[in-house]
Length: 230
Image (cartoon, rainbow, N blue to C red; front, side, top):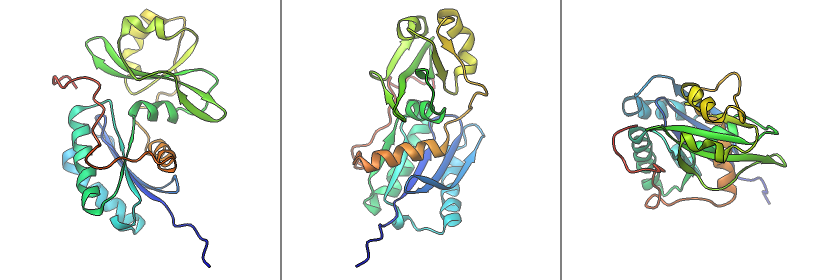
C-alpha cells in the first residue's frame, strides 16, 4: 500500500497593486516565482509570465490543486485582470480558487513581532483600507473587520504602539504621524510590494482549512464602489 501523500501544488496570482507576480508552491513552500516591478503591465505580461512559470517547474495546469489570488483591496483594474485570468484557468479544469486579502499578505510578510500590526492601503480622499493584526502562538490573527476609515480616525484604532505596514506607508507617513505620532511605528526597510511567498503560505493555510471558492462565487474585495480613483 502506498501511503505517500499527493503533493499540493498551488498557483498564486498577485495583481492588486501597480506591479505583478505569479508563483507556484508545493505544500505551501515556494518552488518558483516570476515578478515584474513595472507599473501597469498586468494585461500585457501576465499570461506570458504564467507560461514561463509552468515551464520552469515542469508542471501542467492539470497538476494544480487550486489557484490563489491576492483578493484586494487594491487596484480595480489590476484585480479585475487577476480574477479574469484565474477564472479563465480554473473554470475548464474545475479548480477551486483561494482568495487571500491583500491586507493579510502585507501583515504576514512583515514577520512575527510582539507589536500589533496595522496593514494599510491608500484609498485616496484621505482615507485608508486597513486591518489590525496580532501574532499569537506563531499565528497571525486579525482583530476585527477590514475597514475603510479616514486617516484622522487612526487614533481610535491605534491604542498602543503599532507597526504600520503596506506599500503606501512611505507616502502616507507624514499624515499618519500627524494624527498618530505616539502610537505609530514603522519597519525598516519598507517592503514595497506584496511578496509571493507570503501569499502562498496564507493560501496553503486556507487550502488546509477548506476555505475554497467556486469560480462563480469569487469576486475581488474592492471595499468601495469603483469611481476611477485607484
